Length: 252
Image 1 (cartoon, one colour):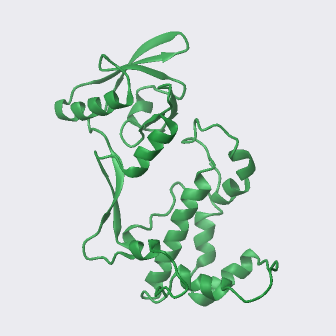
Image 2 (cartoon, one colour):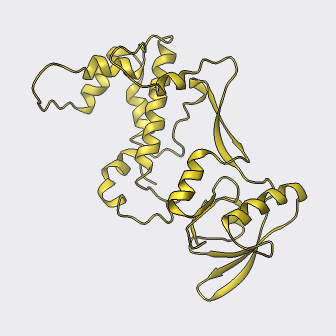
Image 3 (cartoon, one colour):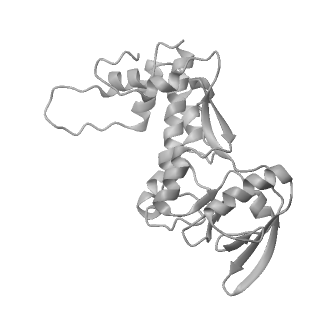
C-alpha cells in the first residue's frame, strides 16, 4: 500500500489502470473517497476542539476568502497551510496529516460518529450500490461474500480475508452457478437471503479459462450493504455540512 499523498501524485497513471484488483492496491478512487473522509474528519475535529464555534468553512473563508482582484496565481506551501490551520484552531495538525496523508494508514478516518451518524450494514441495498450496478452492469457482494463482479459474471475483486477469499476465490474467476442455480445478480441476492434463513452451505460453480470447480463458501449472514443512520442524542452535524453553501451561510 501507498500513503494517500502518493496515490494522489500517481493520478495520471491510476486513471488508466484497470478496475480489477483495486481492493488490493491503490486506485484512482482512493484519493477522492479517502480524501473526502479525511476532510470530513478535519471538519469534525475543528468542531470538537472549538466547542462547535469553528469549522472547515470558517477556516477556508479566513484563509482562502474571495478578494475583489483580477485573476492571479497565489500559491502557498504545505507549511503555510499548517501554520494557518494551527492559528485558526491550535491542534497537532502536523501529526494528524502525517498519520492520514503521509503515512500508510490501514484505514481512513471515520468522522461519522462525531458528526451524528453511525455506519451500519443491513440487507437493504443503498442508492449508491444500485446506481453502481446500473452503471457498470455488474454485481457486488463486497460486504458479505467479499466480491465484486463485472457484467460477464467474472470477479474483478476479492477482498483479502473475506469468506470468498478464504474459500479460494480470486479475481478472474467466473461464477457459473450458485446453489445449483444459473448465476445472475438477482439469483445471488436471493440465495444470500435464503442462506441466512436456512444456514445451509453456499456452493458456487466457478469457471477459470476452460476449467470448472466447485467452491463452498462458509457464509450465512445474508446480504450486507452499508448505511449511515442517525445517532440518538448527537447533533446531526453531517446534515449541516451537506447543506448548499451560500455566502451568508450560518456555519462558523
